[in-house]
Length: 233
Image (tube, rainbow, N blue to C red; front, side):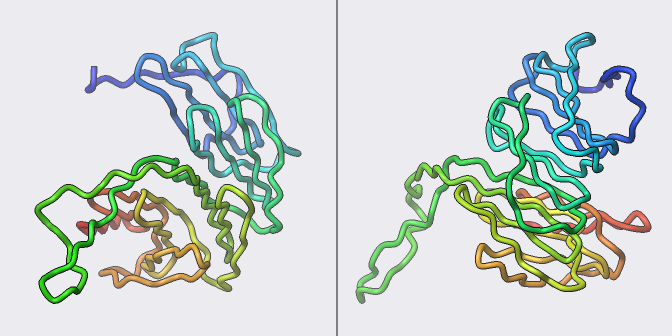
């Protein structure tokens, strides 16, 4: 039921849990949790008791973020600048990123469907958007992985990693959908993350440090002192 909370024990581990990712559907989900001792705890049976297993991809550095681009293809980052990738949700391999700074957040944009604006010519031959017709659905195959860090933003385009240095602008969290990628930082700053590596700062009504962001019909960011800000798309 939607209004019930159920506790799931991942085993005898008592490490701080830093992030969680879930793939699949309710009742048959794959659940992944990363912790402060560098473990990925995972259940391929909806988190049921007795189904949890554990793997440590790296040397024990704190895992800070995890997300998936498909049912079992995912990425996890640690606070020692390392990123790990999996194809099956169980075996993890190092993915060469080229940075050694603390990484904070990991998010994947899954390959999927987009609906670009349909352009038509008006009477004068200029392009005009036909607002009455449904834009054509276009299938995309490229996945995007964004990892935010201490003055760095790491971007994987399905082929290679790109690391951009943004000096003192440490991006505390990042989220994306098929149309935009946002990062949040101290001083109430919200950035549009471009594939070119540029950051475009958006105006916000707060100066508080922002620690989390969710992109959707409403973009929402949360931060220090209980601040919550949102923008309708």
